[in-house]
Length: 394
Image (tube, rainbow, N blue to C red):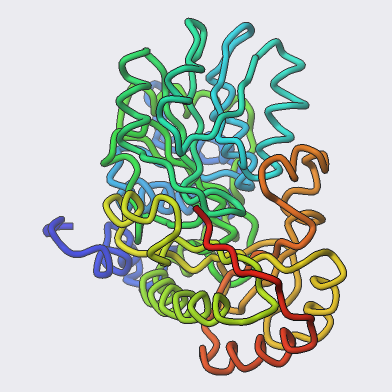
């Protein structure tokens, strides 16, 4: 496009794939071909086999690279496929430093799969830069971040970690699923590989499974492309088209959902049955100032703690608006129970060590009227016994 200085909101709609150059259709064509005819015996065209490249997937990969401020993007069959392929940059005897309350699927990949191939790992509290620095080894090759983390919304100083990584010749990976490039651009803060479960906010409608990655360094991009082509966990064209369609409304969706999440968090901290609220928009949330510095908003995900599993069960059985389900980032609000859903792969003792108690619930706020959500939460919470004290997370 002729103008690359447009705002993020405008670039979601106007890019190199604004319309089909052949027909003028205002939608990216879905190219189902698995193989492509080569008209020149000596020189092959851009596409030859769809695992290696496909026009529809290419449009999405260009889109995420542009939105993240990178040079190259990659589309995978799921968020875990994206994460797993990035981890293939590691080799036997390498070491990876990982956020301690990382997503359960990532925890499983690191502890049960990478460990089988002789790749070592250490979980650290990444909100503490001294702890990060103290655990970097001579063989540390990757520092893996989630910020805000899942599900306690812990905040990592992205620039602080990337400076430590560069000083020790490490790559940095960051899962940007919660924030999306609408609210946080890790590549601009020095991160090497940004990762997404595009199933969530980017697609936004609970109807597609997808993963995305983006890089700024072209040489690193070529390495990841070779891994993507070799591993083969690429995104199908119909799903790529659904993510592209979802991206068009990302800005308005995440803006409204984030505003509602702030209102809901403010309400929850006043209710006598709620013991704690975890949300970066609250002024007392640990890392609030850092988060404010490195993002453009607080996001649409929050967590809150009730007394115990019995309280969670009572609340879930009485709340009406949110669906009770795995996942997040959709037009409908999604209420999740990390202990049995997102972090079920993590042993109970490891969950509790990280603060993921049996009373913790995670809420991804959708596009419902916020007053309706609050009233719904109120009637469900009123079925519970009052808390003893409210804990402002320090």
